[in-house]
Structures are given as C-alpha cells and as structure tokens.
Image: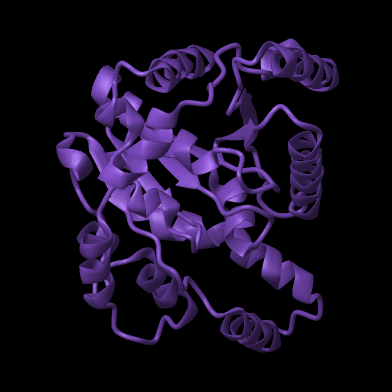
Amino acid sequence: MGHVIATANMKGGVGKTTLSVNLATCLAKNHGQRVLVLDLDTQISATLSLMSPVDFASRRKKRKTFRHLIDQIITPGDAADFTIQDIIQREVCKLPGLNLLPGDIDLYDEFVVSELLHQQALNVGEKDFETIWNRFERILLGKILEPIRNDYDFIILDCAPGYNLLTRSALATSDYYILPAKPEPLSVVGIQLLERRIAQLKDSHEHEQKIETKMLGIVFTMLSNNLLNGRYYKQVIHRVDQDYGKEKVCQNQIPIDVNVAKAVDSFMPAVLNSPNSAGSRAFVALTQELLQKL
C-alpha cells in the first residue's frame, strides 16, 4: 500500500495546487512512481493543471468526475454509472505513471449530506449527531479510494483552502500532510489554524478509529530574490522554525518563477513545460527531500 499525502492550508493562494501537481509529476517522471492526483477543490485548479478545459468539459458531460463517486456514497441506492477505475484519467500529460482523478466545480450538496446523516442517526437510534458525522467524514474518501489504493505508490490529495468536509476527510484518510505556505504572517496564521484544527480532528475521533496523519513538512513557496524581501522572509521562516522545529520545515523552498505560472497555460506542470527553470529545479530538489523524509 502506497502513501496517501494531503496538501492543505487554511489560507488560499499559497501555491498548494502548484506544489501538488509538480510533486506528483516529479515522483512519476524522476522516480518511476505510480502516482494519482485527486482534485478536492471546486476551483479544479489541479485538474486544469493536468488537462485542458475542453477535455475536462467532455469528461464532466460524461459524468466522469469525482463528483459522481461522492454521489454514489451519498445516494447508494442509485445504480453506479462508473467505477473509480473508469473515472481516473491515465497518463495525463502523456507521462506514464501519472494519473488524475478529475475534480468538479460542484462536488456535493451539503443539505443532502446532512439529510442523509440525520436519517442514519434516526435509523440506528444515535442521539449524538456528531458521532454519525465524524464516522462519515472519516470513511468518505477512504471508501472511495479503497478499490485502487494498492495500485499506487502515492496518492496526492489536493485540498481546497479552508476546512470543509472533504478536507477533513482527506486529513482523516491520509498518512501524511504537507503544509505549503508563503513567508508572510497571514500565511503562517494559516499554518497555526490548520494545526489546531487537525488536533481537534484527532481528538474528536479518539473514541473511534484513530486518525494517524502526520505532518510531512512545511514548504515555503513564492520566495522573492529581492534582498529586502529576503531578510523579511528569513525572519518569518525563523519564527516557524522556532514554533515547529527545523525538522518540520523543508530546506528546499520554491521561488517566484514566471515559468511556473505560465505552465498553467499549457495544461501541464512546470517540471514538464519548463524543466530547466528555477521553479522546476526547486520542485525536483523538494521531491527528493520529501522522499528522504519518508
């Protein structure tokens, strides 16, 4: 069974998706790993980093997105149109070993989920609705991934900003999580908030099956070469080192690189589109560092 790794931060705009797709690509391209990227964000940034909008629209029309796997959990009485194997897009960007489970701009209806869990609570006579909800969020992604979990060396879960149902389920399902952050105070607050939420998540499940996810590392992204900014960045990073320990902060950091941003226009990660750029070289080194941590 391979590693399941979630990338998450309470704050958006920290390079989470860019990290997810480039890490996944490096693992497949440079290390021969079988990798699946699962897009859990309704902005579908990871999906559109690996396939064109035209291809995504075609798959969505055919109901071949992650949304329909969630539907099968929420409304299990309905006949399943496709299995997870049918929905996975294989060899995205023509790279062997790199697969994608496309996201959707509409993943689930919160009212329908609440109605389902309320009915389950009534059926089993469970007075504590929180127990039912915790059980659901713990098994949701695990149940979807179960048929293919042994097929991959790595499954990368690209979480949405914030702390919604799918992010909690991703953290409950994952073996590790990576925290991307910009070296600025608000981004650091996002680290603190997520760490607090993960501690609460583990506490809320301590009487059920324990949640074992561990921090693999904090990755600083979007670093500028400007000397004045550099001094400020070092102060922020030093503070994080003190709070979490140097071993938790990745030594390889991702610089600001226009080639990384431009890669989105080609619907492929920077490490494929511009492999010799500073950003791509940083992702290659970071991937090696994370493998050593594992």
